[in-house]
Amino acid sequence: MNAQDIVKLKDQALAEADLSASLHDLEVVRIKYLGRKGLLPAIMEGLKDVPPAERPGIGKCANELKQALGARLDEIKARLQQAARSASRQLFDVTLPGAWRFRGARHPVSQVIEEAIAIFARMGFTVADGPDVETEWHNFDALNTPADHPSRDTQDTFWLGPGKLLRTQTSPVQIRVMEGRKPPVRIIAPGRCYRRDTTDATHSANFHQIEGLYVDRKVSMADLKGDITFFAHRMMGSDVKVRFRPHFFPFTEPSVEYDFSCHVCGGSGCRVCKNSGWIEISGAGMVNPKVFSKVGYDPDTCAGYAFGMGVERIAMIKYGIEDIRMLYDNDVRFLSQFG
Image 1 (cartoon, one colour):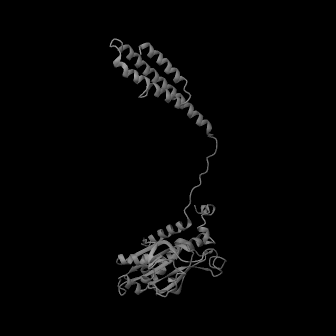
Image 2 (cartoon, one colour; image 1 turned 90 degrees about the vertical axis):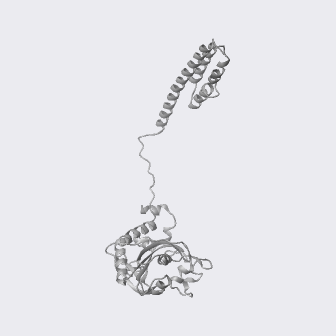
Image 3 (cartoon, helix red, strand yellow; image 1 turned 120 degrees about the vertical axis):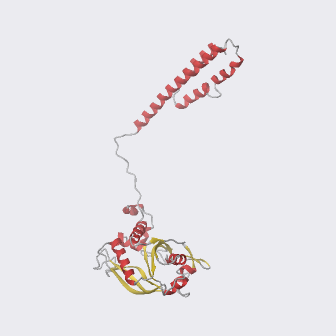
């Protein structure tokens, strides 16, 4: 190939570049002439076979081809890219109002747990956790639950095999903490629990609890009442009243159940509180000395209280939810109210 042939090749390449209607077409032209296996590299490779006298002229023409085609390709590429940007702007109407993007909301159960953690943190409580699959020892035996207690029946508990079950409460976390830590202990244990309850408006086989434990040398029922009352005022409002009623639990002695005054009617009686003016929350009491002995604590030098509360129940009271199943139906219309 002589110099005249290269000049003709340059004119041909520029013409093909001018006919490119897209960036893809332009890339095809570039590869054909300037690519690693294109025509120009082939010409340069063949210079070694050209007579020495002709090499300068052919090399000069080849360089002019490379520079001219490269400049033309850059020019056309810039023009095609600008046309594409203009077309995309024409497809977007800047006068339209912004599109609303739905913002997610924290689940009411999560909100109650987070708020409870924050409230108890102000009283010096830390968060502890434990496994959902528990041992019979931690869930029943260490909590002084008799072998013939109804809660151990298969009608009430999800047994997974000998000595293994889905925990029926978060109280086993208290046992695990006391087994691995010496007093003082001040923890809360929020988590999921499982019981063979028939699902209805107020019961579920899968629910959440927050257990609390405070153990030290001098802890009294007055401490328990003061801390529960503080929690009630921060969670439900300063006008909420708290009452304690005698009860029995195997793992506390003495034991109480505690109620909050109905926030709907203010204690005068309504459908929510069944006209009693009170809403039952859960149980509490002073830790039974037998529980201390099972975890290696000296019941003569240790004292403490424990309490529990249902998260779903508090959420239903706090937000006026009438059916616990609404918390788990995953209806976005309902859950979005709590954003």
